[in-house]
Length: 289
Image (tube, rainbow, N blue to C red; front, side):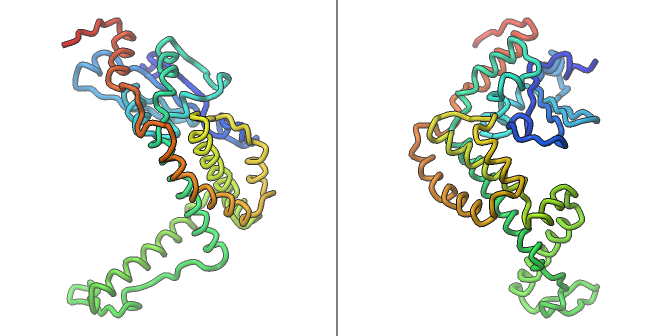
């Protein structure tokens, strides 16, 4: 058995099933944390993460996990706050890591929750325009006044025309990539309801989590508003209502977050925590300078 299994200190269920928002078709997403072998920690070998070939299971090294949590990555910090029923394997080192969870709550985490929610809505707006038969047209350099150069490269009349072509081509390329790679399930939601209701559901979840972080100083994973969020995915809430609900929070929450009592950054001493857990796992006594 590989060391990312034998040295695993924590394994949790994440994603829709951890939020309480799963459907019968939902995958079971698992995330683990492991302590690499001692020779990896002392020698030239490195290990950061391993993704199982079958299923959605990923294990990361403790040091990488803590580094990402310190940066306020929501999908990482969430692993420390999942419902006890979603903790599938733990050890005394995993328990110690989870006990540090409150120290990873910060304004930075809130900013990233807001950022992901805003990005979700920007994609929803763009895709909705494309669904409404307003896709960007495919363009050529000639559309912007370019003439063939001596080696076949287009020669634009000026830099403004070149920049305009590049911007228009980028918009078309984004549309073409989206159309060719569209997830069939998401496409079915868009065709049925006019927008990706699953993406809208998660955008609203992110905003609710940010609001709870600001008001309660907590990161709530298993959603108390699961019934409402499920109704969004089922297409029972209009796009206009969801957009208005979200815009109000996207406008209000940044100032509330800035004025909150949350620390600007995580307060966990990451280096000391990783050193302590890895030394204890391997039965090594730390020597302090």
